[in-house]
Image (cartoon, helix red, strand yellow):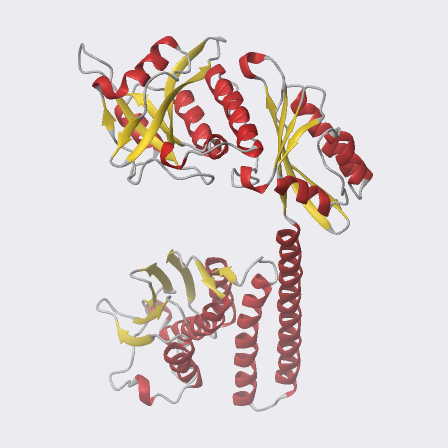
Length: 515
């Protein structure tokens, strides 16, 4: 299904500012739909191929959470014209809210049509109609309205007039979403003096959590919010935001904390026809949400600290092994200890990255680059070997990253040391005139994702594998570690083979699905 922006750009002459305004409207109009107990359909006139009656395209739709929908089928993408859109055409041309007409039927569902022009103030202060909202109410569930419903409908009419005036939706604040609070969370209506004229039961409950047990009606909400807040500065800020809405501006949302409870409030100005008549305050009890957030933050901090300590412990182990290697006289034992140092250090790299991350995943490219650099520095060869990475590993979960870094460490060390071995010390030196220039080796690490698998290739242009080489029969500890981790922990496969152009390549395939 195409988005609002896609449909508008393809079928209309609306410019970027117009489309941006309609996108913001569609992001905030659930409020109007819920207050109206009605479906909202956003209609825009499409490009005309010639003379004739105007046709409209539905680019967005929202259903009410407070009532039954008038449409069982999605209307987005529908193009209509003729008598069916006469009310839309009147609202678009005359620039007024249309409420006349008899109910219409959609199958077995009777509905009442209304049309609200959508205006946008341009840079030259001209205000023009750019679209029309169809407000369609399912009449099959009509009943005698309660006080709550009457206040909802009155507020909806005020917001509809503000849409027509071009003052709703308000400008978006950085970092805010349109998900909460909503009408059902708690609604408070204020008069021009800032006193509560209506508070829904959920709004009353939210303020009761903050410590106010009396009825909200008649209270000056800004002063009350300031008085209840546990932090005087936070209370003053909350009060100022409510007063800002009363002055005709839309401030950012604010959380009020008191007595262990947290209530998120959003204040919106009510100024139909440009006249400030009060404010609409939405209140949501987010106490449990914030408690879970704090618990998760504590858990994340604990996990990061654990990774930091594991990294420190691994570095301590590597340092002890390094000291031991210096005291060992046997060359084979010294080499074995040095290899162990490299393996421990590669694992420490993963935990170091995880200690700085907010989740159990790491950007693996940086780790590969550091391991590759270390491999060229410590490998026993007199040939200059360059490391290069192609493609990207992306973000990998910790359980894959820890095993994969050990596999790559072994493959890179093998590629350098066995693909470009140091010259035989017992061999006679070549004649000076026949001495070739020092060769340059290259090891390339390639990575790409395909069908929920990570394909990794470590290739070199060295001397290649011996003719009698059998990977499964190799007694090298490094290759045994590679096979065990690749087929065990990583649940993948590993293949070592000679390259057609010379050299060796190791091909590793790792599944990235659920483990």
